[in-house]
Length: 250
Image (cartoon, rainbow, N blue to C red; front, side, top):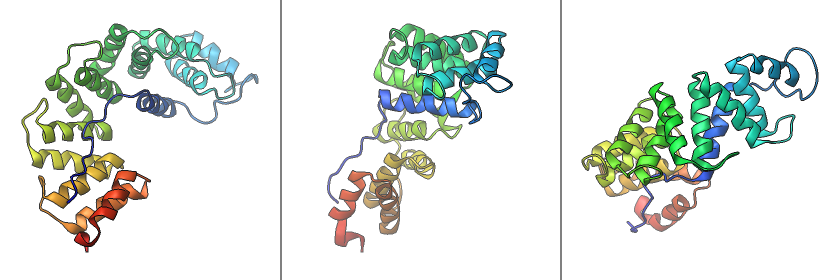
């Protein structure tokens, strides 16, 4: 087996957090809220009126409209303003989004202290994206002292809610003995959960684990299955591994 390594921890990136935000937006933002300046129920003016009366759902939808630029000019500062209003009213989704805005400096000056404050508030309400981001903050020491054990606690909480990226990171902790005792069987278990949730890196890593019998019995069929799933998503390392393994997988 070629010694090809998969990065077994999803490190923070602005790209990943924008995906997090888009997920939050899509969760609360139905397609009909795109009427721009038209009047009447469902219009932007109507939504603003509700939001100004402390309707949290309207505030979240309005923030999503400005974040994505749907029917309006994209405006991250305006999105942040409405997320803050929702966050102040106790919305876990608003708190998470505001925390991510502070974490990445989206529509405001980057501030790790504020990011930590708002993400902790959301995590206290068991909001899964907040738990994932807190895990990354502790793992990478962004605004806090690096603490792998705390990171894995947060990743486990999110993993148990089915969050694929957290499942992959928890698997990485067990694989590397990072924040938890090294345990290849546990690594394989959580990697499989992430892979079954469609995470391409997890599919690739699980294929490699089957090829070497790491935490699972060595199995050519499972190796091919998971490497092909990752390759079908255009993941270049999986395509390369399939080509390199060649005859060994027959």
